[in-house]
Structures are given as C-alpha cells and as structure tokens.
Length: 283
Image (tube, rainbow, N blue to C red; front, top):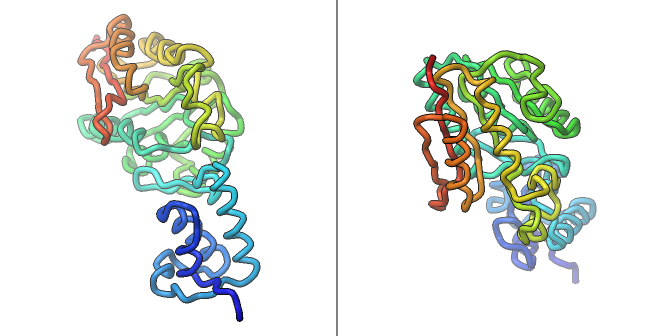
C-alpha cells in the first residue's frame, strides 16, 4: 500500500500551525510545479514527488526548530511590495508600515515631491515601500551593514526602483557625507534593550543582533538619530521613528530636548504606541 503524500494529507498531518504550513507548502508547489497557492485547495489530491517531498520535510523540520518562515522561503510582503530577505537583515514587520504611512501623508502635503531619508534601511523595506507608493519622491537609504545594503540594492533592482533610491554605507547620518537636507527622515533603529529576554525567543533568535538591540538600554540609537536630526532636516521637515511599546515617553522627551514641534505618538494595529514623529521648526 502506497503512502499518501498528497497536499491534503501533508497539511493534515503536520505539526506546524496551519497558516505557516500553507505558506511553506505553497513555496514547494511554486518551486517544483510552478503552481499558485490556490492549488493547495484546487489540487489538494496532488502527490508530491520525492524531491518536492524532501524539500517540504526539510522546511517543516527547520521551522519546527525555530527558523523564521521568511528566511526559509527568502521573501516577505511589506506594504504592497515583496522583499527578498535573508539572515543578514531584519524581517520586515507590519508595525513598521506605520512609518511608511506617516511618510506618505507628509508627501501628500508636499505634492508628492520630496527628499526622503531612511536610516538603517535593512532589506530596504521602508525606503522601497515609499518609493513604490510615491513615484515623484527621491529616496536615500543608509545602513552600516554591507550585507544588508546588498540585499536592499537587490530588492530595489527587482522592484524597478534603483534609479530613484540611493544607498549609502555607514552609521546613521555619517553615511551621508554631506548629501543634503531632507523633507522627511524615517528610521526603525535597534531599540530592544540588550537584557530583554525576547532576544532569546522566537524569530528574534535568528535575526541579526545588531539590527535588534543597541547593546545597551535600547535608547542610544534613537537618541543619536533624534538629537542629530536638526543638521539634516529642512526647516518644517518631519522625522518619524519606530520604538518599543514602552518607550514612547522616553522618545517624546528626546524629541522635546531636540526642540522638535508637533510631536505625535502613533499606535500600531494592536493599539500599542509604536512610532513617534516631530517637526523641525520652520525658519
């Protein structure tokens, strides 16, 4: 009697959560059969061949050991674009889409034409999402990691955005080498405290440590980005940063110390304080 290796049987017998199992099995279908995800239903009697079955079993085992789904399939959706991701970059989160929305609202006020800066771009998520949604915007992105910049540049090329997004390597503003001033500055910096137990849990165990924590209390990168914004924001320009759910008070204080005005806290879909924005005084 032959063993049932149909899609229906594999999904019914896996130990993975159903959503994750469908993502991984759909990836196998695309890789080996060039079939869309809908085939999980429309062709649920399909028997996987040996090569596809081995890949499914490998992906399943690696996910059960904790590896992030995004790294296993090499991609992650983010604000209407799909990004290639790998262990050298942070996996884009839905919460970070807040920064994109803040930037797009500001761009509307400016007629769509503006200079945007994304500090610590990682996979290029924020910079490329803004460039994709706002064709007239000019976007600059920086990162200290050469590995991250290589992935970000690859994503820009795959999305056809390379001509409108510039990438610079270096730490925060020092990467710019006098590249001018900006209408909007955005950043999702490392803000998890080094002693936070979450760094040893879930997907965070596999993501680059330098993209998650500042190695200290979680505020040092935010302090640098906010304190030095005055030299890089145009008069009346806006800065928006992502922060931890319990850091809004500290971030607002940093913005007040930097003489920013119109300071606002922005909540994520879970209702947590997740981003803060402030405006440079107009001349």
